[in-house]
Length: 213
Image 1 (tube, rainbow, N blue to C red):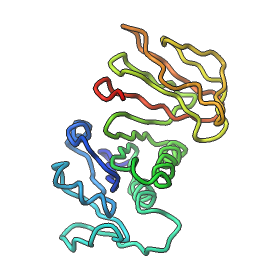
Image 2 (image 1 turned 90 degrees about the vertical axis):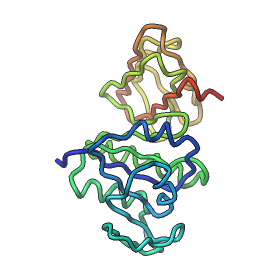
Image 3 (image 1 turned 30 degrees about the vertical axis):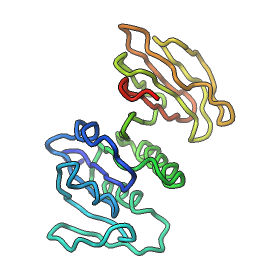
């Protein structure tokens, strides 16, 4: 186990840098993936590791550890960064700049959350308006300072779902990929919602109050 948290920065659009910066900790280890380097100055942090095939950003040729990847490969730069974080012993991950823009990359990067969860690691994905994480048998809690939360099926089988202390509770439910009825739920005032998925895994998305669209 490595001390600190591995923060992976991708090249997707970040519109609210303050929101993202608010998630950082003093002992974070920052991995910038190729085009993610365009965010480095605005995020106010420096790369501890740079990885990429540099098809989106020139190789900065800096005195920072850099892993140059081939352009033709199975792993995207972001997937490689997650695997490298595992190899280095991190147990906690934060992903930013990895959703939005190209839908194919967004969907693939959501899969990184499941990959890390399947390896027993804690992983949170943060974008301009939400926080995302995988939920399974271990409960995930949502405070009422979030405007909404959605439980969606993006990973396959998803059953034996329990949602407590919410406007739309659920007991022993199932959400299928072709019927996503778990969108825009709300925590009851003064309560903390509790979500578990007893069969399969789900994606929990928490929406901030100042980002309602």
